Image (spheres, one colour):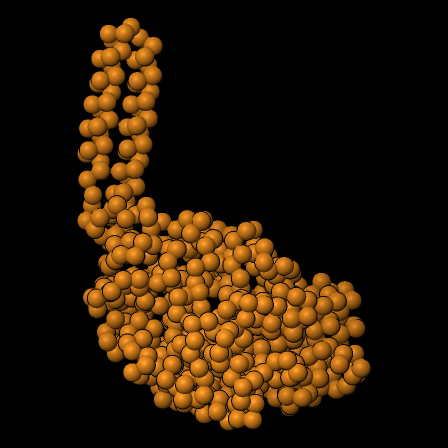
Length: 541
């Protein structure tokens, strides 16, 4: 139903008070993802998933491997079963562990179905009750002083194919349509409103638009327009709630408590209130009423809007920086285990991470501040404990060059079926085993990258010297060929001798070996290859 039929209905959510809240993200993010809590990914808890009634299969579209498939298979019991999972997978014990580990930020993966009125129950199947769980978790985190990024992890219609994290493992990707863009924007307006009016959301300081869209921008039509509208919906919602908004000034909350009545008066002359944004806001009204969002206090600081960075996609993607209105952050995900970044050996991994230029490259196109919202310790080779300790240090140092980092995941299942999955995928396990320092702002060895930087520098110098020698030799030979024949032979011989000598001197490898540098440099072709997770989770986060 279109909300225009209730355009004059009063929304009693505008009682005006200013609670003391954390205004934004920490100066440096030291975080973890709360993966598999409100968006379940079966590979992370294989034993529990089977116990719940799920299934395991090599092709996740052929069995009960996702929340959507589970809800369709068990419509009468799904809500109760998932309530049990939600209560046990993340609770106060986990919050206490995060506090002990020094974590200051969590990224909470959410499905669109957490806003239950958005779900088309004739064809979409998901557990109900997640919003109450989100409120519970946010309150526990807030008491612990931990802020949250609300990550739209699973989008209407699924934003990528064949992945458990979309809630619907399918080859039929339908997110990139006007209908599903519209639903995602309504979700955004609801989450923005809750973040400002519901005290349980006091520590929700950022909203991420889309987790891991398809990497090929030619397959995400109108995604750039969606990015623009995402920010406009956040800022328009805030504006109507009386939050100071760049370019629009500050307005008081409507005296009659009816922010829909403000739309005609402020919308006509504002670039933010375009037709789609107005339509989204109007369609959000009945959902807020249905969710019972009323009589709550409000905060005045703006939320941080958040996108995957421009370099996540290839083939001329839209730049999310062009959509920014007010505070905005950017997210990059980096997993070496799925290839496409560095050769599968310790030397290549360390050379690559120690010379990583993603923060600088993103800043050059306005994608700053940048944080690394997903990363892990898994490798393509059998890594020793000593290497994982160095690998953890090097990644933390590289990602801290930006706004910080958020590890995937806070924990995974420890069971016979899971094997030693926790060794490389669980932050809390990594702290326990000593790979991570107990203080996340510290590393075991602040100089862990020094030898690898030296190796990279030596390799670059070698390449430059070799190129110069080759150029000089070529010029000398060309000059000699224009001289008398006897002189030319002598000249050419001297030239070859000089080149060989120069190359021999400059190609002596540094330790660690500099020969790995060329194979580990991130290239456009490597970043354009959508190689994603080999595990059932995803293909390259």
